[in-house]
Amino acid sequence: MLFDTLGMLGLSDGFLVDCRLSNTLGPRPEGSLIEERKNMASFVSSNLAEKGNGEAASESVLSPLVPDGSIHGFESLHQLLETSLKPELFQEVSRLLLGFNCGKAIERVLLPEIATSLSIKHDFDIQAFCFHADKEALRQPRIVRVGLIQNKIVLPTTAPFSDQKKAIMQKVKLMIDAAGASGVNIICLQFLQGLAREYNMVIVNPILERDLKHGEVLSNTAVIIGNHGNIIGIHRKNHIPRVGDFNESTYYMEGNTGHPVFETCYGKIAVNICYGRHHPLNWLAFGLNGAEIVFNPSATVGELSEPMWPIEARNAAIANSYFVGSINRVGTETFPNPFTSGDGKPQHSDFGHFYGSSYFSAPDASCTPSLSRHRDGLLISDMDLNLCRQLKDKWGFRMTARYEIYGDLLSSYLKPSFTPQVILDPSLQKR
Image (cartoon, rainbow, N blue to C red; front, top):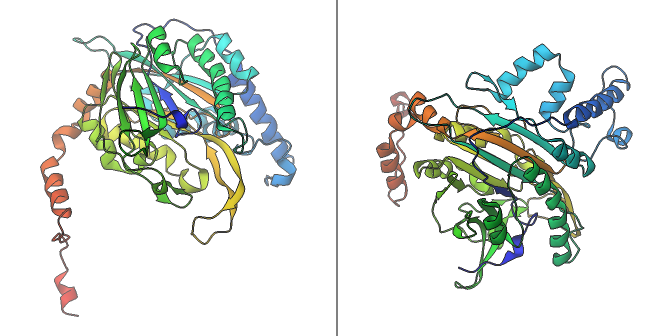
C-alpha cells in the first residue's frame, strides 16, 4: 500500500500517539502553569464582575481580554467552575462531572519544570493525569503512558501547502519536546518510521490517503507504525459525514478495513476516526475485537457538536470497557472565497471554531478534565490497562448482552422485506 502525505499534521482529523510502557512512575516536580492559568481566569472573572450586577460584558468590551474561542477567558468549563466555586462545592461538582477512578478523584501527574516552562513560553496547554486499577493477585499492573496533541494551523489557509506543513511541524515539535521531557514519546512527522525505531514507540498518524493502486481514490486513514519503524497496518474511516459544511462524501470514500485492533507491545489499540464517534455500533465493533485503548481523532466545531463531545466517547468507554482518547482540532480557519452548504444559511468564510477540549475517558466512567478550548495542547495520561478486565468482571456487559438478538434484528433490517416490530394498541384500531 502506498500513502500520499497530503494529510499531514493539522490538515487531517488531528493526531495522537500510543506511548511507552512504564511500570513505575517516579516523582516529577510540578510547574507553575496551573496556578498561572487560575490567576488569568480570576483576572478575567474580576473584570466581568466589575461590569455591574453580575451581568456579562459585551464581546466588544471583552475583546482585548478574552481570547478567541475561550469561555469568557477561561480555558475550559472545568477551569471556569474551579475558579468560580468554593473548593468544597467544586469538589462535589467535579465528582459528578468527572466521576471517580477506583473510588477516588482522578489524580494529576506532576510534570517536570522543563515541560511546563515550554508550555508557558510557547503558549500551549499541558496537563497530566493517572487512571489507576485495583491491585490483583495474579497480574502485575499494566501501566501505559499515552499522549494526545491538539493544534491549530499556523499559516493562513491560502499559504502554499509545503509552507503550511513546515510551519505546523516546527510548532508541534515544541510540544513533542515537552512530551519527551515528561516521559511520553510522541511524534507525527514526515520521518515517522525512523523516529518510531529510535524512540521505541508506537505512533498512530491520521492522514489523507491516496490509494495509488485503486484509482487514486481518497480516504481518511489512520496509519499505525510499530515501535520498530514497521507499518503494522491502516484503518480507513468508516462513516463519512454529510452534515452541513462537513460533507466529506464529495472527496472521501467510505472505509473498507472493518474495525481492526492493532496488537502492539504496549496494548491493543484501535482508531475510531472523527464522525465514527456518533455511531455506537462502530465503538462496539472495536470492543468486540478486543481493543484496550481507542483513539478518536476529530475535527469538529462548536455549533455542530460541542454538547455531544463530552458524552459520546465517555459513554463508549463505559459500554465497551476500554479507554478512549478524544482529540479535536483548535482554532478558526478562514478561506478567501465564501461558501454555502445548501442549508439555507448565508455565505460564510469558515467552518466555525474548532474547540479543542481533548480528553481521556476510562471504563469506570471517570475522565480527565479537557484541554483548552482555544489553545494548542498536550494531554498526558498514565493508565493501568488491567482496569479494562476489572470493569468487564464488575458489570458483566459481555455476559448480559444479547448479541444473537441484535444480530437477528440487523440481518432482518438489511432485507428489503424488513417490517419493524411494532405492536399496535388494539384500542386504536376501533377508532
